[in-house]
Length: 321
Image 1 (cartoon, rainbow, N blue to C red):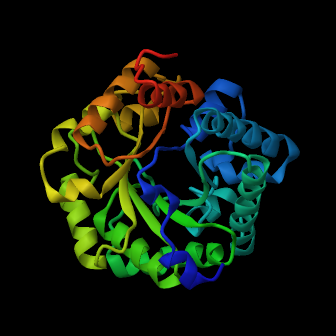
Image 2 (tube, rainbow, N blue to C red):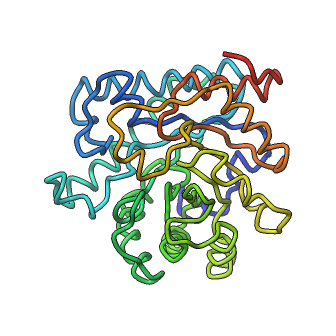
């Protein structure tokens, strides 16, 4: 598939049918399965047989759920930290990071093929994290700086089988603008997922709606859609108002924990919240935004949470376990 085809072909989730995602990959493997992840960079697991097995078993659980529920699935690469900002911490060269991105796409493509009988489409999605700490960004990037920085990882991905990229847990509108421009120039569809603090604002203090409007204005709505991730639903409920920008949000990947980012960063034990309560809150959110059709989890969530969310929408049973 050439670059032009990728960006002009409608993403399968544009159909409005339900698509699931996975949950909190790193927190689930670390806290629930005892898997060590160096520097919280999940792509490092690909370098060992044990790590690949842990990743495969993790994703197989969610792919089996999508198969059982007859939904689509957004299948992520574990590449959130596979970019040059983290090279020094990881002791990795640029060539090694580039190879890790390509290997990660091949890895999830193999899993997709394993579940080729799934009723809904399985979309290969490359995850790109922000430059710096997603909970407490050390510096502000302008759009030009962000475009130049993120273009490197986008270029690494463009010739792979990946069908889209997602800017996950982004904290700044300018940085989001830059990566949208980089992806658009490379011919890759892109989704931007912002994270918010307990007050419903980005870590920069900017209201969520203002950030979405700013990115859309600067990029001529080049992002396929927006999402919210790594925040408890109650953190942004008040931001869900009757405004035009709200229709640009098509996906939710929330935390089950009500803790702030600072509290989560300092926590030594996992706060998994309550899957049933989380599913009920998703129902309440989607009742206000019925166009949202991509649902999954983030930090602290696992297969239990996403299964309960799926049951709430497929059977109407928010109390399913």
